[in-house]
Image (cartoon, rainbow, N blue to C red; front, side, top):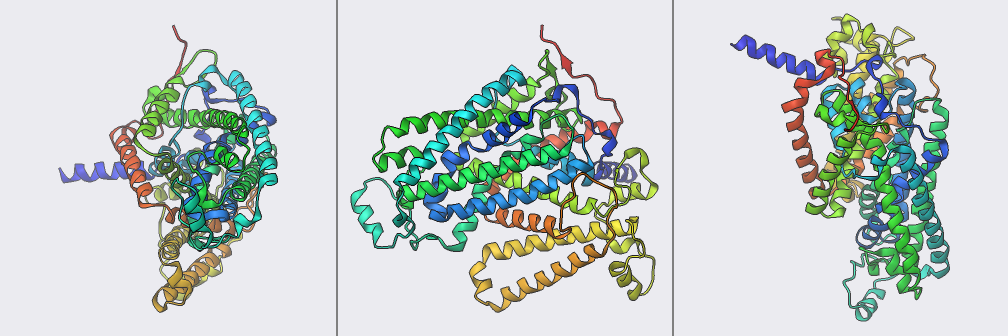
Length: 561
């Protein structure tokens, strides 16, 4: 009996850490999307210039950051840029898919892939994509174009009506506003451009990251040359950043930050400066922005849910496609129903924070994978070329770098860490990077927690916390140097992340630090969402995985009666 239990546990453990071969990754006909470069730019811009711009912006400026919200968007945009660069290199290595789900399946194993994929499925909504891609793309261009015109009007008229004094408010201005305005005002803080200090800036940046979570939509395209895709994603990111920066600047210039009506910030701002009719123009922009944002969610959502269903990690019926449009209608409608329930149960700010946590986790996973991949032998990651040594690594992908070192003196161990004998990656050097990378994630997580919880005490010279922070930095530097000394793969790629291993580690640290800024409510929702996901995975996915059962995927195409 005990032997059977041990065999079952071992079998489940193999499933949890099983990594997928890149040659098994394919894109079904039902998930192929043909979009031009212009349509992809509209998709990336329209998806991001939605609720984050018209709703989240006002709440962050009023309660969290004040006029320094422009810095918040700069930090969030930088984090998104670093993660996007890592995405592009992974595209070059596994050119048939660029989702964080596939990235995690190839590098980390089935369990981590499910966790990442399940968290990316937050707040995707329904309907218009079921019309088919060509029709939806046309509607999408119209709504996004109108939104851009409205934003141009907001920015120009906002700078005309702005007042620099609103970036220099003092504590004496607050009582005057309290006497004049009857509605609830926000906290005054210390006044000035950064009224809530550094803590407010980083907390605002964590929430503002929600505004940049939609760039995975650009990956929803038929694979081809990666250089245009890289340019398109960076152009879209730059356009969205400039829009957020400019709109947040004009909002805080038009209205003192503590007087912002956060439920309807921009229309009320124009009413505040005496441009009441302009509210109608803004209302049209809000409608078009939210519509295009919802439609933009459908492109990556349908691909992700379809891919996970085809792999057997979600219910197979979700991968079924219908008619000539080849659209997974069941997946779209199911996720839309779930999103509607969440919208009824939770406030939008809580859902925005939840989406930010999930996206930061997924982006960190991609950065980690790119860091490790560069130092691995056999970079094709082909399932058909697995060696016996790689099969052994599947059970313990986080194996200690010391496990592969022959029994020798301490000097030989240190020599293998600092002076590798080969100029190309080997199994031993790859294990060293694996172990060091996981250790770095642990150290960076502890450092992020310390800096997030006790920033003033650390920077004011508290003996204990300052010592801990310095020791963590020294350890991080030392372990990073060990990775840097290991040989990198010479495989030519269309794009390689520069400054390895520093850039992916900076991306991971920024993402982790922003995650540590989230409220306890966001983490509670995150835990509930993942508890539901684990119930589905252990109750269904772990037993139906195609990769584990070696089953050919059944046809999921169906023509409606």
